Image 1 (tube, rainbow, N blue to C red):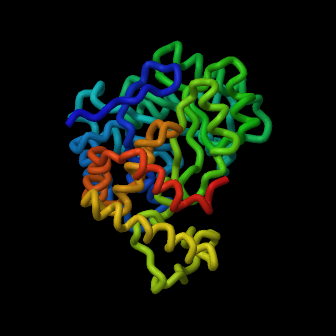
Image 2 (cartoon, rainbow, N blue to C red):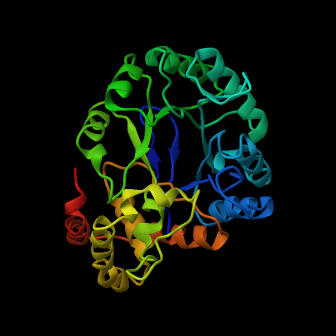
Image 3 (cartoon, rainbow, N blue to C red):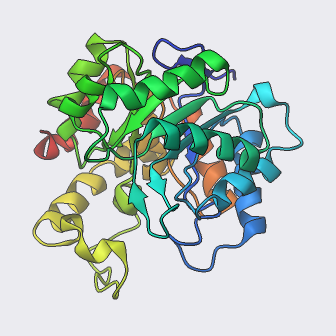
Length: 318
């Protein structure tokens, strides 16, 4: 079954509505005990199972994720997959400083091209806004790179609506990557209407909400994750919100069973069907997870089923 393609913003980039979030591919500073060979297998599992967009960033292993993607994709035809990359972390001073300076962004793209072993990057995002650089100036630098053929689409990530508006002053922004999930729907109220009005694509990160939307958590799950675990500071894992989340997720079980898929696959199918979402990019730590995620591309939700999922999570709407 052929997978429908989506076009990102006003760019020429087309890709699948399901991508791979590659923070666990080489993100050795983010996750313990990652193996390079597993990271390469994850990327190849994505490409072998109909997933085309590989979403990485410099900060995932400080360039190591990019290097592994370059190795993993070496045997694949370049026009059969797309790479989305991000930068904002400047280490030139010896410390990590967020920068949107045009010279830094242009240097970041050149260095990323080398690590990725490619001639162009399909989407390049400013990963985080800095405090000083005019956003239209920063995006203008990426637009110059787009004209030069080094990147094909311009993106911003973790930007507020006001920052997106400033960045898009000249109409150069093609894609926004911000947090959005059934549990975190704030983007519906402000960012999404602006993007729709200006033909800017939306790519949500954390679509499965740290696994809460997969059905793997229960009332008996030990929520004492230990020091250093990012989940320890999240309100989603604190009562009474945690129990409210479990109730909503559990209510999806009959619909998932009717489609003979997991809850995670059903939720991914919801995002794929969501007209406000262009590409959903779940992460994976094992090739088998990528293969399972890819099956969401084959799930077709009726209007009634889509509405039922939205209703189940209406309490979390903005």
